[in-house]
Image (cartoon, rainbow, N blue to C red):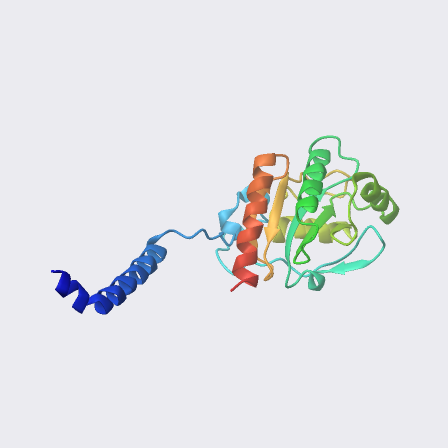
Length: 225
């Protein structure tokens, strides 16, 4: 027996190594890999989606936009193309969920501050009230990094279209009043191809942790292959 193993030692060693590699490949192939969904309007609560899009099941992407940030600079969709970004809809005079959302977005900002691939965007749902000076004061008050996070104001109808037809986060259309859109607490994770990859409760710290984990998965999907 010892003579047999000595004679075929090289063969058995190679065979063993090949078997381990094959087993490893099978394990990897059979193990479930986490993937993030690509959200379509038909997958979202109809209350948050414009009626013209409620049955759309593919090819949904964030629309073009051009708005103004807290420094009076024009920010467009093109500046976000190729980046992962997190968006929400707030207003500076909101007394309820917005302060918590902003506080939690500051937490996200701190976690991702050194990552140039990730950006943050907050759209004001009361743009007539949230002028550039007001947004700048809000940014200073909350500790918002201008290089990392844009607070956007501009044409009210354009922002409402984005909320209802692109990000799918508004419960109803505006009717012209200053507080007429019922925005949600959602943070929206958008990939470099302008596709929605996740919704997260911006008032819930556990959801924020999930968001940060999913950012890592998106980075691997787009930047590490």
